[in-house]
Image 1 (cartoon, rainbow, N blue to C red):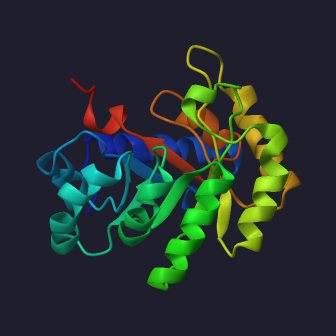
Image 2 (cartoon, rainbow, N blue to C red):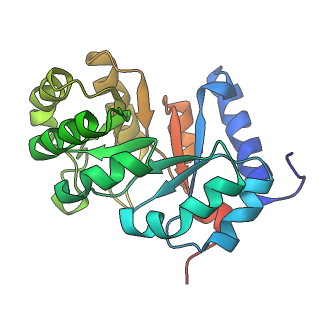
Length: 220
């Protein structure tokens, strides 16, 4: 049940307001609470309030805290939003319900092998390096068509595209660019927008927003 005057209630209200401006149905937007670095006891209040989609950066951190939480709160959905090493692909497939950081051919191969081994398919977003910042990870824009073809040929369910715009630059053009790329490639999902800009992202087509600080407060 949603509780008034909580950070989660505020974010949900902001999402609804942004959708109204954009003439979108709020049901089209999935709020991912970014629980990375936060302990289980900080996550429980959001679960009790009805939040079910959560984002983690690291496989090992998620392995340590989520099995117990999932037992207590059935229906929780885990999204891997951090960069994924190929040698962790099998662990990620076993634990996560969605992967937002597919960004290179070697990872396509590793994920496809893990899918076959565990008879499980996990929807994946291809992360695109819209700001030409290789340190953040992400497929270069020029390589996107080839990576998308490879992922589809490997039987990976591609849910859409993901991006992290450069810091300290107006994010709207990057969101609009990702939206265009998704449309050009026939993809429905756009994973974009964080605590400081998720409302802008929604107005520009985001289907998944990754919100941490606005829900949990600043990390120490």
